[in-house]
Length: 331
Image 1 (cartoon, rainbow, N blue to C red):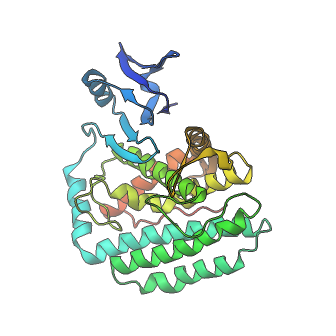
Image 2: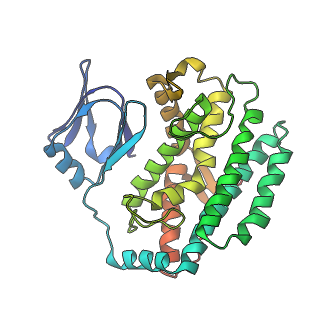
């Protein structure tokens, strides 16, 4: 099974014949290249053109993060699955206002449905979230259908998420953390730091999966296609943030796997420490590799596979084979 390499220590990434070698002051470890899905670099890691060519030949993306865990950029190798036909179809759906709005609405619909599932899950476990469940239901049934532009969709989705984030104080009421509203640049409390880092992992994971399809990550629908390099991964990630990033956050804080000591402060900004990032990444990977019974496919699939399946559904929509419906968790 392929795996993601997370490099937290500073050192060097090298090619050793047909193997990837990670060298630090303490040790040297080898990873068969055929077992590597992608690489997340958090430490100060040196690598040369030879290893980049090796990664390109083996279709391995490398994602770079800053000292504080901010996403910096990706090494996106020459595409092996690019398709002019699919690019045309993507552009066609972007240029047609009705088609673009339809897709954008579906991404928001998936996000709100999955937010609702998270709230119901914790409501049924003794947290009084009835007010928030009712609010998200109103967003879904009333506000979402009335949106006639992308800007209205974005605004409505932002309002719904703001309301949703307030519920974190009830879900995590026994923890030492509270959230007083969403803050991103920079996060100003530990929960915001966790939300931002978790969301970033979902964005980047979806980008890795897009690379394995015919889709072009530069053409998104909810997020405008402009001078930003990638936008489609942001769209698809909206569907999965509640069931991946947020559920992992609740697990880590609820089980006290993270404490206030796992965060660093820089002025008013709050960031996860290296230990905190490691802990979150380990739980995030456990979540991705866990499986569930997919009712439509009638077999067990992992959340990692689920990301790819969602992209295949999007491809079918773009070529007119089957209308895209976002994945909605049932648990």
